[in-house]
Image (cartoon, rainbow, N blue to C red; front, side, top):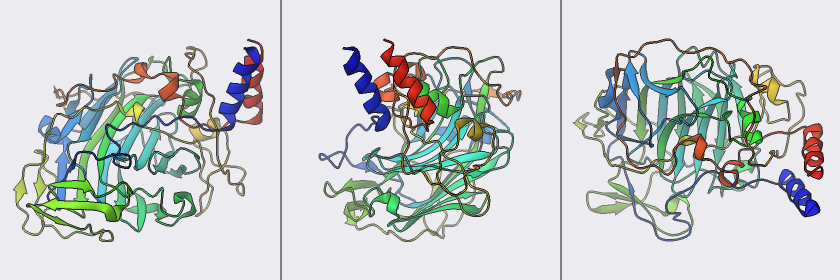
Length: 434
């Protein structure tokens, strides 16, 4: 028994764990219900105007948003909280912008996630203890056979300053943009997409959330990636979302998967009782009022600027901690960036890689289910003292997750983490002692 347990742990550290992401129905495996579309060219929500802005969002269980002049507050004040919302509609190629300020705090993770039913995914991730960088990442069809897709880029004080984070997404390429400056470009045929197979290309919802990657019960690989153990001495740790703006390249009443391929060409655009093929290349939409925020979460009909109601529902929403996967990687100095095996501590203090030439092919994570202790937590980067001008509960319904406390070793040990040879040896020796 001792041998088999040790062999299992060594095998796990040499490969990759199961993804945390889940889907109610995977349309690459069976016929699934159609996705509710955004039947307009543009959507805008201004959360500084209060709770009316969340009219087209559903919330995870135990998500209670507060609002003030800075926008919607996603607050973590204690263990087990993971405030998360998602749009009640899908978009199919376009430009998605979120103006936000990330939460501080060691182990706290703020997230912007675009995700489809077949587990295509485009991410922005912010670590509370990393005050100089933001992670960009993507996944296709839930594939986690490698974790070499995440790259960090410099951003000025993301926990103290508002920035606009944009994804410009077409069938040909994805741009990650910070305050109007493109920091990363992913082509459809990039080697990381395996010939386009893993390129995100199916209708997606926008998810926004704040979660604790350093709390008790979280696997140690996740804790290390998140920056260390979280304490609540300086809580609450608040992520602010000021506004969301979306341009949708393929307005529709609904999107249907025409076959099991998961290709963008197979998606059927259902609108006004008719069906059409998707537009894959257009990333600029001319819609009057498309850049104007509205407190009602309204959408604008393409061309004439008419404001109509956005789709609403009572969707079941999982806490975003159940949706996020990440790899530890570091930007290089200069204009080019690469994934490498710099230490987690270097990530979280904002330093850059010293090995400017090495590129890691894949990384591994410490598996396990035992809770991490309180000791060893790093100092957080401060707490928000802004007072809210009102409290409103984000409209939501029953959730598939009540927050980080619900994670198990099976569904949470998948967050990828770079390990040094020494830490791998420590894991092996620890299990040999059992």
